[in-house]
Image (tube, rainbow, N blue to C red):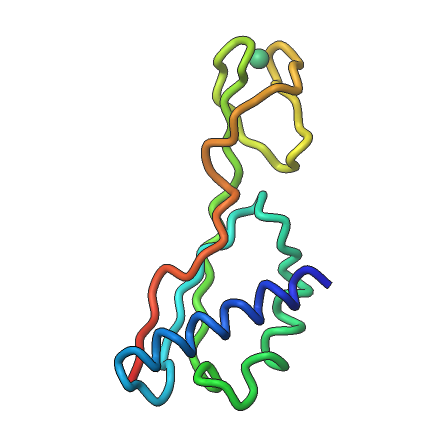
Length: 113
Ligand SMILES: [Zn+2]
């Protein structure tokens, strides 16, 4: 499952960050997971509690920002909302586009104690 490796790497990063400042635990974690990042949120929330047990993230408050996808058509330069990675341009139907927003997958902020 893709989400399992995503959450594992988030936990790993959080532990490294906490270690850097001699923190014992993370109180709050802010994530940015774009709608086009390929992360299935149901699966994410399913694996999250399992992965954070006995880590610095145990009991941390989880905040997730999910920016929706936005792309610019390569052919006609129209900017449009993208639900799925393979959506084509609503104006000229071209499948070629540049993704502007929505593929983010990162930790925005950690509150460490
Ligand atoms: Zn177009």
